[in-house]
Length: 551
Image (cartoon, rainbow, N blue to C red; front, side, top):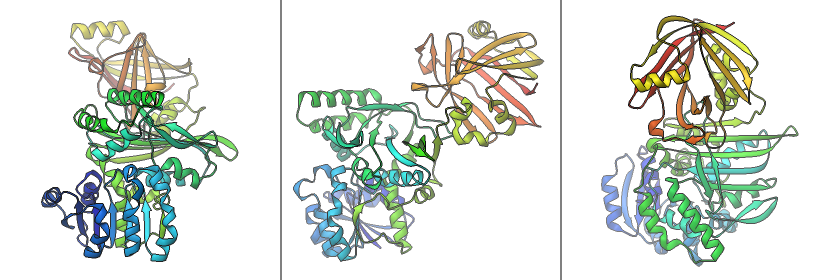
């Protein structure tokens, strides 16, 4: 199979070629305006697929189709918002030459308008699929899965790329170009407009049982979903899609510029895109992780429900996700599984299982959540992962009723003066080889008070589900200090991973945050705990490990 990739040495086209590197039966024409860049990219390519550089301007696509006779054209160039009056030149040329077509289009109007070519594509016996990327191919696949068990009324979603992923200049031009511009969407059951990058929300992407992303600031972006999905699901009254690039300070500057442009009716901010592109690709701060989410509200069995889907991608795997939809279709084509002829958006082209098969060998995790307001807070935080906990761990956290467990523990204490002072303030027990332990659990203030008695030495903390920037985290308060921790299921252990902390309600620097490897598990039918608390510079404060069983 011969595939012509317009923008083949760019961000998305290049990653697609890398994803297909194991396909020895493919010939990939790496096309673009710069012959030297195309040649350099091909020279560095490592894979079984055959690659050939091709100098090509999209305006000359008809001649290129006649000369090279590809089986498939993939348009990975863009920005699709700037194609002007002759926006569909490549699509029209492909239909005329009877060549199948896919693109990465992120322009909502472009993707929404592609079905005007449906009759011509059907007559030519070719498929033309637009927007074959995370939005809307993946998001539509997730919604289709959710729609099996609920009536969808409201959809919110977002993508948070890793700060190390890098972003193409054409993508930046598109995003900065519509900042402050009207964005078509559905709101209150009516066709309406939002303001690009001037509307925001915060959300925590948290695959059940995995380490969540930090709470992210998302802003409205003009993606195909806003127009395509309400057509697929007429019951949708509200839809909103955002992006959460980091660092947040740069994101908020763009928010302010978008609001100023909308309020003062300023010209497009697109001339600033090279500056944002330069800064964003150099300010690589934070964790090398990215994610996506969809939060859906509606009804099931006549009752209101809220469900969400989460995706977490570690390291360098996340940046490949936008190219995986086309990868999936190409792999299906190699097995003679063709999309139906016609021209349309990619919503409906793939099932969620198609994506999950590509995610599986990579560090990409996904999961669904259903909001359960009346459930114990550990279950609310962990979602379906709660049911995978070891039996005794699950038993201890499955109730919020008053109860008491007892057992024994060994305690170690740090010797640094600062560590000793911290231990004394909280009331941690002294060092001991073996000491009887009783833990009393009592409901309090929407959470649970844990009172620990180590051989007569008592200290307590209040645990509850986090909200706001502590969303999807367990918050534990010791007097004026509060610690927000992620609950991570790691084999037969429930690990507690510190993520944020505050003192007297004031957020404190993470570099000063107490930490340590702490977990819960079970062994020999008993609940086992292992707590290790350390301070930066001061080292060990206290470490205690032991067992508990119901009283």
